[in-house]
Image (tube, rainbow, N blue to C red; front, side, top):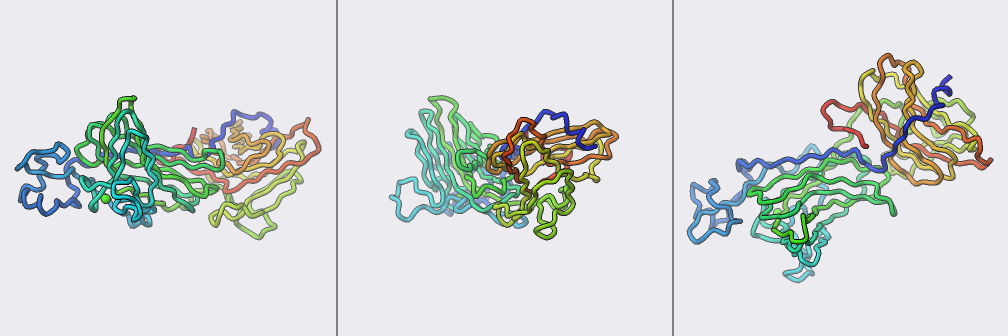
Length: 410
Ligand SMILES: [Ca+2]
């Protein structure tokens, strides 16, 4: 019965890496309400009671006798609930002990300035502590400061930093990049900041890292607008938080294949005599087991389960880690409902591929109360007798909350 609904392969799409990345830009409060800023003693004495009043920005190089206030800093700082800042030297306070005084050797960060760009730890501006990273750009030179983060697993992350700009042509933004061999499997960028901000602005980038990624790079990067682009920017209070994974959202039972003994596949059913095995995934402690299926090309792959808790009209995200070896045909995730005539296929794995994150969205049609999620591959009548293998790990169906937050990839 179910096989009939598999006959028509719908339009498939596969998202490699975490393309479903929400981005947001938080403009810092310009009201100067961030009480964390203190003037140095000499300036405090000169500013007196008017110290909180922004009379002249230090950026404007005020003349003798002018009162000075530093640019306002948005409230922020470590979020205790999020488990602490993952980044090291995110406040740009520590320089390398062995580097020359003027060298751009910032502890924990790799600086990548092009020829016309200089970057250094500077005490002329600081959103917190005594220093920030100051970058002077000219002649359209690019810049990036990079820090590698390892061992994060599959979790939502929030990256944020404070940026101050002066006459900046081009944009500063936050980015995250992850590669597995030659493949780029994680890439996301925040909104950019340019011009003259007069106040520290907080940039934010939300993303989710795939479990098969051993590490990724966090970047503060500058992209010029033209070959003549120039200006100055400062970066401080750079933070990365690993947020708790949402609990109880996955509608797939035993989607991570971790329940039950090694030789029993709980909650899933199958309609063919497959060579199934629960094996170590290599994805770390988060998803230690995965499902391995070995089968000839001429046989249909069909393993699935009913999704009884979905609601018609609601949108959901479906995703899984998949890899394959010498697999004939195309392995996919399929949402199927006979009553509603639904056959929605996601992903297109074939041949030999390392772990990818296959992801898509779907809406439950009206009148649908028989929705099944299938780990699928149509039979290949012309395939040889040779067997192929496909692996599945952490299969998820997650509700997409109204108003975004988990808007899926494209
Ligand atoms: Ca600092």
